[in-house]
Image (cartoon, rainbow, N blue to C red; front, side):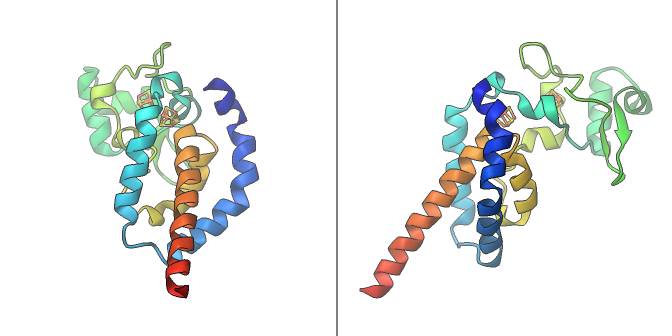
Length: 175
Ligand code: SF4
Ligand code: SF4
């Protein structure tokens, strides 16, 4: 797994133009069964991927914190929300609340999340590959390909699957 993670930026760079073309097409004409297809690809990938062997998302980037996240986590840590913000968060150039530093301060040495039950919504939903209307988050997904091994695999499988479906449909039309 670690070799794959180390190679991901280079692998993603190689695929960057291909992925951009693929997602531009997808955005223009998303297939009707996209939500179902993404759910299946996501479930299949995460049955095989153990995030505890990776934690690259927690090590290299951080989630956005909503006000609800801040209140919930601060309460769990028995802190005031403003104290929590001062100690752990900063406002980024887009005005979003993000971690002051990475790796995330709540990542334990064995890759467990110390606040797992109350973790930010963005962490619960990462890498968003089972999100409805997946074609609406293409830029984010292209970025995640370079960081999340599961996203890389899902996008590769997605391209292969859609290519096969396209070939079958073309053959049917020719018959
Ligand atoms: S979501 Fe992706 S980057 Fe995060 S731990 Fe799992 S496989 Fe790794
Ligand atoms: S809060 Fe937990 S899941 Fe989210 S980045 Fe930090 S360690 Fe990872």
